[in-house]
Length: 124
Image 1 (cartoon, rainbow, N blue to C red):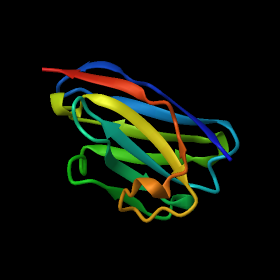
Image 2: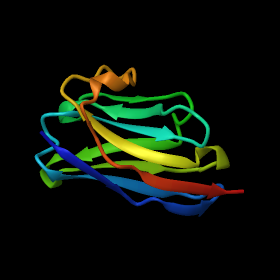
Image 3: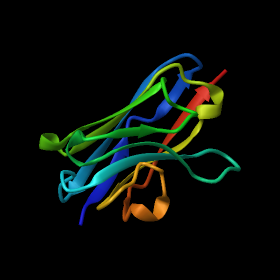
């Protein structure tokens, strides 16, 4: 089991950058594939990015490819989502998640562990 906690959200102007962190407050991240998801106001939660165990492969949704970067640092039990060129439509609650076997397709039931989320607001 692992418990996840996101941090690093906040208010940023369009075109700016933020880096979110996901830390394991209990357990370790190494055995899990990791993903980032977002829920924007009035919308369903959507997949953003994933990284497999051992940093083997990374996956991105079309909405964020080229602007966001997922990374993991297993010795510190921390994952990151670096977000550049932010747009107002990137506003939402950002969640990190962990799963034993993640495909990279962003299928939510592959992720058994979720953080509480961190709010990101991008102003125009």
